[in-house]
Amino acid sequence: MKLQMIGCSHHDAAVEFREQISFTSEQVSAALSAFREKFPNGELVLLSTCNRTELYTSADDDGTLDRDAVIEFLADQHHLSADDVVEQMIYRSGSDAVEHLFTVAASLDSMVIGESQILSQVKQAYDLACQSGSAGPLTHAVFQAANRAAKRVQTETAIHRRRVSVPSVAVGEVVPEVFDSLVDKRVVLCGAGEMGEETLRYLQQAGANNIVVLNRSEERGRGLADAFGVQFGRWETLLDEVVQADLLIGTTAATDPILTRDQFAQLRSKRRDRVLLVLDLAVPRDFDPALDEFSNLYLYQIDDLQAACQRNRHEREKEWPKAQRIITDETQRFLAELNHRATGPVIKRLREHAQQIKQDELERLLPKLQSMGGDPAINKEIEKSLDRLVNKLLHPPLSSLKTDAAEGHRKGLVEALRELFHLSD
Image (cartoon, rainbow, N blue to C red; front, side, top):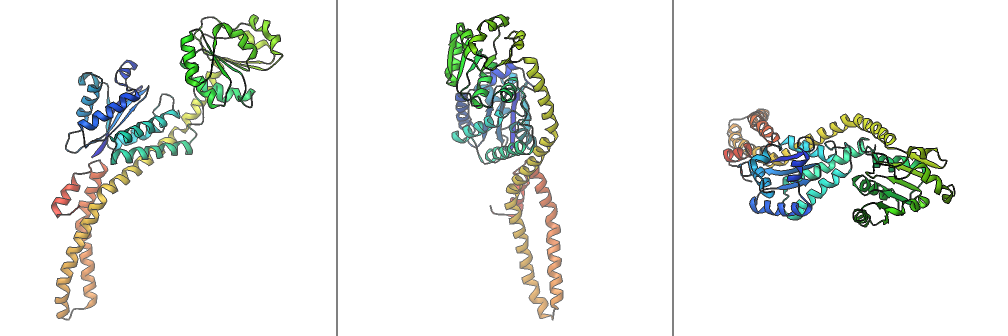
């Protein structure tokens, strides 16, 4: 039995296809149950995110759970043709599959290298497999080792420590330059799209506890606000909210500025010279560039933030070789442990079997030599010669056994040796 991975990601499949074969949390649970019914002896962990869908399964030596069987299962889950699915899927097995999983978990295969979210997604996929009973000895071992590899990359490299998305740089690097803390600061977030949602997540992680979301579409804006447990304000209250704001953020799709220099000039006196940090994350820009002329107003625009993202991205890339060495090291370590578990008992029994034969022969031979006045020193040499003979005879089959296991064939020669030498389990 060996690990195999069948899947696709943003590297090799268009978003339209990824949408077709993605799974919601509920669909993952249903798919794991269906897999157990169809392959009672198989193992499956199903990882499905916005950028990838990957099925990690145990590949049986008898071929009942091979690549084609998994492709057919995946196609059936989405009512697609297996031929259409197989053309856009990547297949990896054995050590390649193990190394790929470790690379994914460590966020070295992500769209944004070093993002921290992917490891929690891998853990969640594994937890769901454990709950459903579709995980087994092989997937237990490899996913626990993947977590270990990812943790090493996090602690031994700086690849996760540089922010590379615009919202993360805005909240994590720019805000601390102006405010010691966001606790009790009035944060006005304009826009409820993907950029707004990501920004809101970082704001709460940074400790912001007084946030209002403004959006032209009340339904979408209120839905986002409710999802994060923050306030919602009508779009018409924007200028009133600017008066109260400490931090003003724009993430809308507006074609014209939502706050101009003249509008701010009219309400500036109401702010009583309080500091206002303005983060413009939108394209086109949400805020009039001339706002930067006012004292106590600090305006950061999208180009400033993207330049910081690019610098951080370059810093992450410098850490890539170190992270890759960790992945290679952990892959080799895992395979060595796996191979030892697969071959250790058989090697032990074979050595015991050979030693027993040697001992039986010595017990038969030594009394005869003794009766003929044999020298104890000669007896010792005979015993040493038999030990060398046993080791030389065992070396080729044991070496082949380890090689066979290293290539992922966890039965193969193991079963052959059991049969040939009549070894019990």
